[in-house]
Image (cartoon, rainbow, N blue to C red):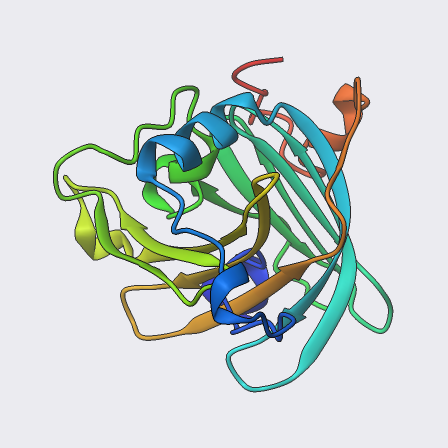
Length: 207
């Protein structure tokens, strides 16, 4: 299994079918400062998710977020996949594989853009696309210093601002789409959720 397919299961922004709105009710395009402020204010949250994989198959599961740096994706059966970012490393555990836990530096994935301690989408060359369809705002962001790491497409609705989905496009042309359910902000999540099984040396960087 390739890391960018099922593993970076947090990644591709399929065009979610949002309710049509009349022209006079069309939502204004969210600014990059508004989106940055929203992400910086998003601390600890959870949600169900639906993932559309690069091969067209669909997976579901639960998503846990603890900014900065930490995220967990638990997949429903028949998948036996767990993806955890602990602040420095992204670990991928595939129960159907004998390869053991696969580890990747978080700072070499597009996920680092939204997991950063301070998100600033106004940085030069970070956002390469910024548009609104009257219902949602979509941006495409990349690491300005390392565009070869791929990019992440983020879709937000407004009033109040809410992250609805994202798409990760890797450097090899793969796309993975994750559509979030209602994002529930919570006071805390157990630290154990962000520990990577089978990788004891990958200590969380920001517990």
